[in-house]
Amino acid sequence: MIGLIFGETDFPKYIYKKIKDKKKYLIIDLTKKKLFRKDKDSFSVSIGQLGKIISILKQYNCKKVLLAGKVKKPNFSKLKLDFKGVYYMPRIIKKAKLGDVALLKEIINIFKKERIQTISSTTFTPELNLSKGNYSKLKPNLKDKIDIKNALKALNKSNQYSHIQGAISRNNIAILEKREGTQKMLKKMKKIKNIVKGVLVKFPKKKQDYRVDLPTIGLKTLKQCKMSGIKGIVLKHKRNIFLDKNKSINYANKNKMFILVKWKKYF
Image (cartoon, rainbow, N blue to C red):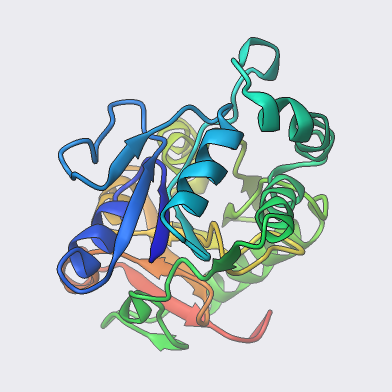
């Protein structure tokens, strides 16, 4: 039995469709709108009910969990905690102050202490991991390559426990993704004229555990990039989740955008 701990975004929905008729599972639904409530094996739980989550997993003999989707960091002072929530929360709050990477690692460590193993979020969806290569007809030109290099430099300078997974670069200007995420960053880009035909680089956070929270893009991302004047997207080899792959590639080709997956830091 696999415990699926689902947050927001389309990735959990994809996993659910892929395994619902093939694997024994239960769902811990952390979404605001209780997106998985129709499944008889779904449990809607608050993020503060850590004891309840662990209890459900153990009751159904779930020795492995898969974490997918975004869960908005709560206001810890307003959380309603159960007993284990009270026990573990000081550690969680301490790590949360260091950043998302430290927080996720602490949650994985808590599950480990409870003898529950965390498996990769792409265990059942390896087809969503792109290998190195150019996936579009258009390839980055020399100026694009300089922009990619600048974006990667900016990402490498960010804090080791940072939430940052993305950067946009053009004409020696690099703008880093904030905690609000890529979508809101792209919306802001519409107002910055110097970023037109810029490049979006989505790489994992520093010291990230690759089992959880990999950079995710899809057709929605491509459309937002187009609206924001972004010319191409760069991902890291086997360290990404690419939804709507065929539709996204067709869209990129139609709109003369590039999709590049790299292994090395620079060219």
